[in-house]
Amino acid sequence: MKSKRQVGGHVSASGGVELAIDRGAAIGGNCLQLFSGSPRVWARPELSKFDAKKITAKRAEKGIQSIITHSLYLVNLATEKPDLITKSMVALAFDLKFDAHIHGNGVVVHVGSHQGNGWDVVRERVRNAIAQLVEEAPEGATFLIENAASQKGKIGGNLEEIKWLINEIGTEKLGWCFDTCHAFTAGYSLGKTQHEGSAYTHTAAEEIERLGLWSTLKCVHVNDSRDPFASGRDRHANLGDGLIPPVDLEYFVNLPELEEVPLILEVPGIEQEGPDAENIKRLKKLAHIET
Image 1 (cartoon, rainbow, N blue to C red):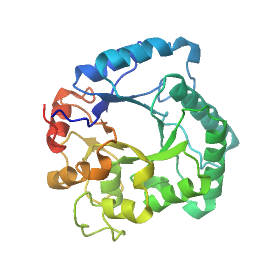
Image 2 (cartoon, rainbow, N blue to C red):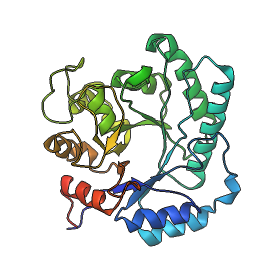
Image 3 (tube, helix red, strand yellow):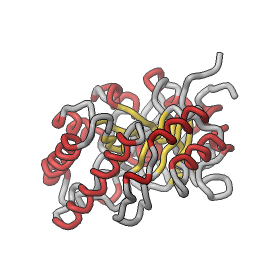
């Protein structure tokens, strides 16, 4: 019996979403992630340039079950700078409209950094910003908070922060995305037992269970790590080429709670051109998916 699990990679949307779908399918994926525009500039394209009917038809043709949008890297909802918060809100509002317009499956967001001020100081500001965005977002849009590697005050390194935001805002338009590299370097083991050297006592799976976060988990970024456990650094590696024990990664991606959750690669690629067929093959092997 052919697996119904979703595996894919982050692909370029240069030339349009339809070409991104072609690229995602070409590497062997049945789901994908993309940017709505350049991730390093504030300017966003016109929504009218995206033909939703053509995108839906192309998805059906290529068997792409989910399209995740990744927000641009410049966003910081924890900032004290009015100009930066305004730009962040405008950019994220566009991505949420884009997500609904193309009938996507969520917008993954790096919420930002408290820049040394501490979570308790900025959490109300972050909550209010996300609450406004999801309230104003069209039906069909979903805001997904991504866990962080914990470097430089990044919000979401501690999974309790994500749980607090989801509980406080309390809407089906809000969920979260789990990144294996970020969790590993933040100090959450991906295996059955917690490793030494972490401030956390629970493994990733134990903590997600303890916090009741499985039901709101909408996407998993499956990445290996170039850096050691609990190092706080965020540098992705190709699957099997990094420092995450393969047995731990295998254990995590085969948890029954992830059976219907898209598994998305954000790895450098064998030729340093991003997620590729080889990494899809490695992911399918880890996830016990017949090819």
